[in-house]
Image (cartoon, rainbow, N blue to C red; front, side, top):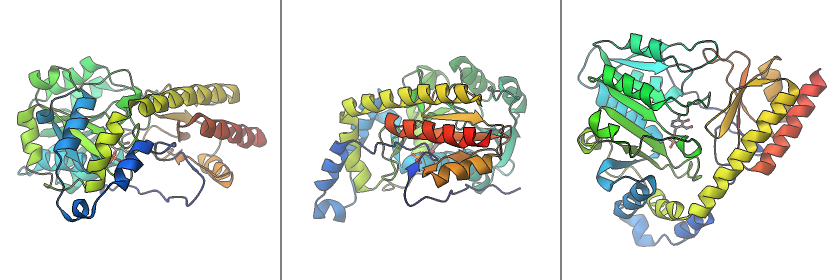
Length: 346
Ligand SMILES: Cc1ncc(COP(=O)(O)O)c(C=O)c1O
């Protein structure tokens, strides 16, 4: 079986609610910082001290525990390389439904992907994950809150997994943790269980998806293995300039979190009214299970300029569509379009 990241077709205009992006854009302070880019800064290899310090302070960790990456995707790839290198039959556990990059990167790094299917309610299958751990397990990919379900994994369940697999890296992808109630970032468990690596991104809440800014956070000894793999200048100067500005604009960040919370409430209320099943999400998107044909619903929304993600092909996700919850006014437009499309179908 081969695994690859499914790159979705990008609409040239319209409302992008298909990739969990920040629908408001980044903080204006980021654009001001980019305008200050000098010819020398473009010409010289970048220095990351300021960006690293800003990101570490914002995430509440010390700089020696944080490694900047070219988007969290690079952190995922580096982790796969670190876990699978030098071992002919190493395994990576992927808990479905999952972000495609885990299987793609483990596969590319020579690991065998062990898929753990979800129960019907898509809750986190702790017992199945524990049962899948064996002597060949070198990597366990966890996502909290998960993409595409929006469910968080309780801390003690992560701890049980990391304790059961001391020979493996347990990668805790917190790409959406800005929107969630919990994080492992400054948790002492990163020292008591140094096999845990936390991944973060500035793509979502900070709106830097195109600038590519992510981070790995771990015990310094664990992080040393990953520092050997991530290229020394993989984060470009624009991302390095953007990070301090984005981290400093906490008012913008809080405003955006408020927009996402209001948007999720509106999406839940709309889906309730329309009789569409859905899950409460700790992230900036909502997964819903429609009764009709998802391809038809997705294209009817696209015809109205709204792009959402058909996830019905994911294990356990028949009938499911994922919608980004961003700026409240955008969500109002989505809610109106959903009413039109679904009531028109009745
Ligand atoms: C769970 C998860 N991890 C990582 C990423 C990638 O983040 P980045 O854009 O920083 O590479 C995404 C992007 O959608 C994601 O959903």
